[in-house]
Image (cartoon, rainbow, N blue to C red):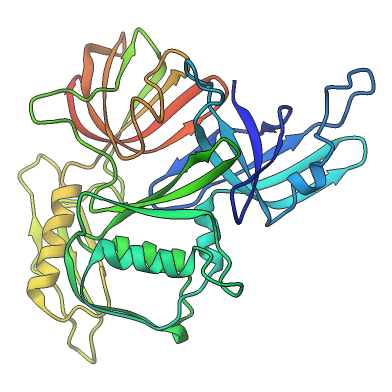
Length: 376
């Protein structure tokens, strides 16, 4: 069973254990975005002195001042489990006789509450740009720049050198929106945030940035974390789509123009696929003027859309499945093998985990399928 702690939002010190806290739904984590959830702290039962909130619950649930962190079950010789998810209390709603209702938002959401000043970068590797921004704006550096108990970790090298990247104070960009935009460029950096134990009484955040978060298995070797049905998987669903945002075989990238002139790519086509023409036109960036750049965007879009989208939804028993935070992490590749009457030949493959959902009893990797064999 998950256990909960309240920790100080600025230094990670444990304020209280909150054993009776319960989330109202699955706890969710996704690469490069924040997630939210509601939680409930029940009132004290007069017949049970151990029920209800801790004595210092007003401090332990103070909105904007604390994170509530969910710990997994401890492994052998561990006094406490690993921190799996944390949410800052943004709304706290005590109700007479009914306990306390709260809204929790993951730490990425706080990044959307701080703004950048003038930040020009020239010929700087992209992951170092992210590191410098996060260290300047998200970590406590002075009484006027109070931030989170955070350290930055670069994985896989400093990344591609960016010739010119600039943010201005006048643009009113939050750190979160700037990082999201930066990650959206071709070959841009990926990032995520996770919790760690700093010492026995303190938790801290790790901001992880790299060209790729997580690891693929070595060539010719299956991922270490494998999900099976029959086995830990309790439900599996394959979703194939050729909808407007998933599939196209005739693609054009366009930019903003003046008068009768508009920069646009050549039409990139794959019309030998047994389908009628499905067109897609979009603007990757309004500032692109070069046709070659637009052609590159269109070619990449066609490569990703020509076969539509293929999604796999699996939910597993958390006690039996490979352990999140030990056997696999967000961004890693995982393996799956599914046998069911709906898939007569079975489904075997590899998928990249771009997020996850967690309850007391289940784990749901949110995946991009990279390889699948069987009746797909």
